Length: 367
Image 1 (cartoon, rainbow, N blue to C red):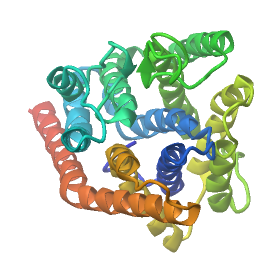
Image 2 (spheres, rainbow, N blue to C red):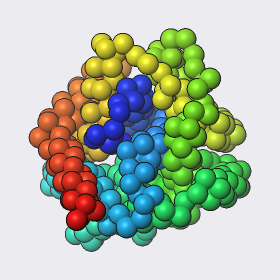
Image 3 (tube, helix red, strand yellow):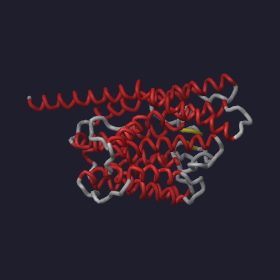
Image 4 (cartoon, helix red, strand yellow):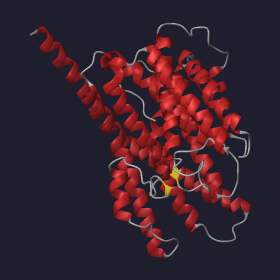
């Protein structure tokens, strides 16, 4: 979900990330309203994993390939991801406690255990949501752990090994999807009504183990100039439109639809975005979308839970649209405030630490 400070801006990718976060929020709003609109918006998570591999390879791939930087990189990613993830967790816990106190819904069993696990980026595997107080945060857990693994393993990740890992994960993902008839797994477990069968948390690992290494591989090939011919006129408009069209259909399509989007379309869109040059004005809009994307993804879930359980009974459709429109606006404002006061300082700290680390390395090498 998060970009990398200090690397050449890939402006179109910023915009893609922001639009994808808006689509995820739209999916959850539609679900709260009982609608299937944007019913395939969950595929945006796979796009996030793919873009993460691409952007992190662009920012840190050369440094990590030298070896010995795994702990440094793990610390950077923890600092980058943790503050907002913790804010989302605490907001979700506060919403759950408030709704329980008001009698709108019961509090989760073993709430302290759930809080501790989520604060440690560990999943709850006792049934239901992997992160009960903030459902969308399940993907952040996988994001952090795959980042850490990348930091330590980067020096051994040749193109061939990356391709092999991606291929094996793709085979597993295809097999599980066809066997269960569902692609959407990872956010829950032991709850067939909400995910792709029992223990589907591990389906999430298949998703990230396909998309993240592929993102690294795509960046390497892109940086080597292999994809220069992948371009399209008006790509700045084509990219968000393509994401919307992918997400728009209601649930119930063949799982081959999801597999086609993740295995074929999304890699093409990422390369297209990397090759897309945008105007200064469009770059500013894309940068804003990119900055808001992480906060929006992390914070919108608890806000929508509150609005869902506090929704007045019997509202006509226009009033319901206004009610959830207010929820969306509040989530965007919360994301903007979080970007200013939480995410931006974290980015600055990480960038400053990175510069210090590089300086120290040069000085030691010279000595």
